Image 1 (tube, rainbow, N blue to C red):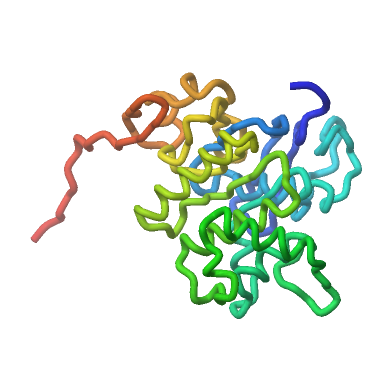
Image 2: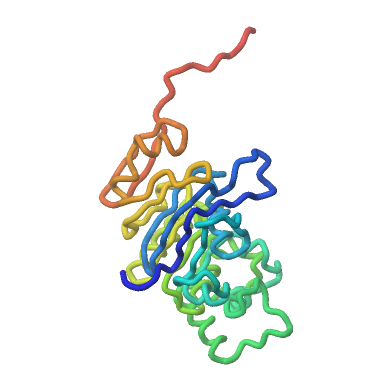
Length: 277
């Protein structure tokens, strides 16, 4: 790819007050993502994935150190609203922040204003309303236009968030733990949707701890462990039994079916002590 990376982190360290371990949430992380690149950031819970996303969206700030920087579109100074026109974000935090009486159409329209609801000073125009309705139709959820978020299933709400993330026709979409709270059918539909978006030329940035969510179109995998980059390279080199056993701290076997991957824990050889009776 040519031009400046969409996102570039250099030697970034982030310390969050909520982390009582004293360990940085991100520790000297360097990472570069190109526009329209298909990439997975994989790691266990607590490895720093959420902090990485919040650093990109300027909800968290790194320690000011020589040689440390967060650059968007090749610039140290940038507007978060401009970023969201290039990178759509699908995260459960957005849904949690939405008003429970917000409708599907309201949620999609809120993407034009980088808000979580339509406030009085927002005045969506006819073109924006038409775009919102077209996106709802694209994902087969026109029937949710006037349905409150609180009355939607997790799968339905997820599709509404994807539609919201596409209002500016961004080059890439970032999915933050997209499969959480989804049943088998909704999860399969989500993975298929990510593949369709990737094939349509939209970059997919998947942040997850579920190997099964990694779509065939993803070529690069970044492994994150304890706030550090543990590995970064081609999918086939990163998704091995040895690497993922070390990443998750448990012996696993990686299964591959074409370009689909899954992980199975190895049977334990020790026995559980039942204690004295």
